[in-house]
Structures are given as structure tokens and as C-alpha cells.
Image (cartoon, rainbow, N blue to C red):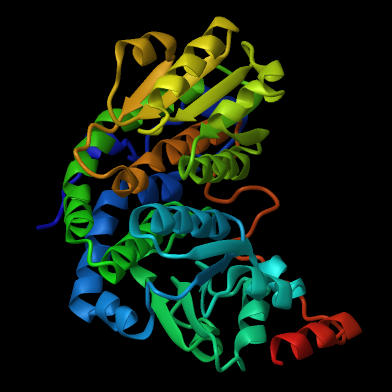
Length: 397
């Protein structure tokens, strides 16, 4: 059954520009692709699950890859934080050994990276399927007979087809806008399903089946308040805090607001914020908490502590408590009866809405952020350096 979305909730109709938009001299269409893509995420997860089932993708991958051997995930930008998030989920919930690195780490230190990871299974993640560093890293391992590789992309014409031993493509999840939103959560969902099947965790897989149905009304209810909150106050600093695997949600959220709104953002392990970064807490700082189940009590104390210092708090948590509610300027509760890590696609969405709203308030177009392109494609080097040649020789040894 297809999920339906109320147009009134999405508020994407072409209206007369507001006074703020006219003052900022941006098109009333600014951010429209990004907003549609953000709001489409629950339906996109349902479509992703349908494709995976219909095409037998998870079964095919589990016949070539295993939970018993180490994995290495490779990506850049959002794809790197996605890779770290997948590794955290796989190691915690499924006991699958894995490690994630930026593509440049594998590219310039291949022998060391492979030795540290012990990986015989390497995943290259690139939404565009064109990111130069990722493509070069995949090419570096192409001749390794002892390493199985998987390219993950939204581009059906990606070089992954001849660079990797296996390819998984999600063209339906691609965006028109520059920044990853629905592709991020759809790829995350896919690897959650793969991890669950590799370890035979049917309960986790069932919780993912219910996610789109639960997420759509939640998104319709909360999206307006998040966007409104982002426009009511101006902040000089944006901080995102997460403990455990939530740290990688915080890193990705910081990247989102940086990309979409050209704002200064930082991410820390939640309780580490007391150890130095606490000095920036104040009325010009918005601190977003991704509250974990394991550390919720201690994290709530920090929310109250930073509130007393004058900072604004945005709290993303599964279940609200009186303490969190009283110390939060905005609290977004997921209210989902599912394993913690199954909720992560939902937990990622508030940062998408926050970044879009702040960007629009600043007169920017989140669809096309300044200085950014959908893929970082570099010119080919004039000639191979001795260092590159040596690296290739080592990795092929």
C-alpha cells in the first residue's frame, strides 16, 4: 500500500514570496527539491524495501558476502558518515566486524588500511557513483583476488559496474538537489536489512517493515514545528551531540547544516562537550542532542546544564521525559516501539529540515548550496607520481 501525504503538511505550493524571502532576494522556488525529497523519505523507504524484495537483492548479496569476515566501508562526506553509522549498527546489533574510512585513507595508505581492518570485503559508497577519490580507491582494489568489493550508488551508469565485483544501485532514491537526504536514509535502511539477514535477525527486519507507516504521520506532525523553530532565532554556532552510534548521526547533522546553510557547525560525543567545548554554550548557540537509550539519564543532565548557561536546546529522543521537556526549546519525540538502531532513519530527518530552514532564512538555496556540486569530480592527474605507483604495487602484492 502506498503511503499518502497531505499536501497541507508539506506546504510546497507556489505562493507569493514572504517578506523575508523578498528581502533575501531568493526565488520562492528555492529549496523546493530539497523539501520534496525530505518529505518523501517514508515513502522512499517503502519503495526501497519493495525493490529489495522484488529483485532479491539482499538474498543475492548474502550469497556473496558473509558476517564471519571483516568488512571495510569507504566513502566521502555524507557517504563516509553513513558508512560509520552502518559499521556502528553492524558491530553493536549484529556482531559483524567492520570499519569505515574516508576514501583518501585507503587511496594513500592502502596497505596500512587493509591491514588495520583485516577486511576481505570492501564496500564503496557514492550516491553519484562518480566521486573521484572513491572511484580511484575502487580501481586500486580491482585486481585483488582476495578482496570482494561492493559498489553502492544511485547512478545506473556508474563506473562501479567495471570496478567492483558486485554493485547495488538505488536510482529511485536519488535526489535532484545537491545534498544527500533521502538517498542517505534509503542506503542506511538497505544496509540495516543486509546486516539483519546476514545474522538472521528477523525481529530487527520486521521493525524496519513498519518504519514507513510510523514515520509518515510523525513527519507530518513534526516538520512544521522544526522549520518554524529554525526561523525564530538566529544562532552563531550549531552543535550536534551524540553518544555511541548517535555520534555519527551528529556528524552527519553538522555536515547537513553546514552544506545547506553555510553555517558553522560542530559535532561531539555528548558527554565530551563538558570537556572544553562547553565554553561556547550561550544564547548564540543551538545545541542539538541525539539522545541514546544507554546514556539517556546522563544526557538529560547535560541538557539541563546547558539550558542553565543560556544555550538553546533541540532534543531528538524516542520518548520524552518531564526533565527533557522542561530543558528543551524544542523536543522531537520519535515514539516508536522498535530497536534503537532501527529508528535511525527517522532520527536523521530533523537535521535535514533544520538545515533547509536555516538556509532559506539566510537567503540561500538549499537545492544548490554555494561552492558545492552533487559529486566531487577531480581532473585526472597529469601523470602518476612515484608515491601512487608504489601504493598500487603494495596493494596488488
